[in-house]
Length: 292
Image (cartoon, rainbow, N blue to C red):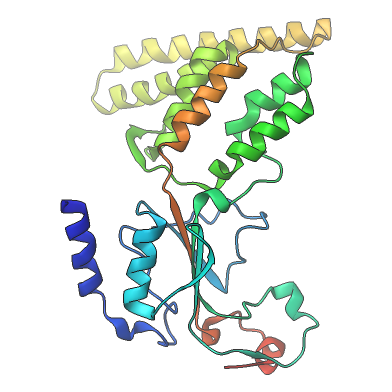
């Protein structure tokens, strides 16, 4: 009830007149919006090119987000029921194509609301799927088709946002909840990699101890870290000498459990908002061949 009230208040507070302002996006970001990381998803055909569009994650459902835009930009067009909605906010005429295909200029600038589940992944190349890639290659009872099935079902998680945790990295950056969960499962199911992650955690703790002036305790941790690193180097050298592949254990079901938990944490909705054409890349040829 409180959440719905807050959302309704947000609708009232944001002015409707922002559409068409040339120095801004064509529509406001949704409530509690998180800007999509510029390094996450780049290179994917699903993520629009920078310069024309900004993308935002929101913890609100597709229906709530569509209601927000219906109130601000007019009734959105339903592209796919419950999954994809679109509002065209400016008329655009393209005089000729040519290099515009390279730019991928939005033909109907406006705002698009999508379920995060529509954001498919063709390759599932992130660390979320590393264990499945290894098992499908190294274990006889799994195949590429098994990996593709997992990728088809959960690949959208590569484009999702999961919120921040209370944990921080060695450099002081707050970790997202998916990063924390991935580390926990890796430590449990992949001992070799888990040792490296444990060393990173120990490094962060040693640095905190130094900042507190506890030099003896910090020194002891640094010595333990050096020991772990030396053991890792020796293990790698032995593996090279024996020309053996890294042993992979069957934890398929355990990693499926990881993905199942992860999708319950994902922000459900992603929003794409185009810039006004006056804010598009400063290319003379581009601006000569569009009218708005």
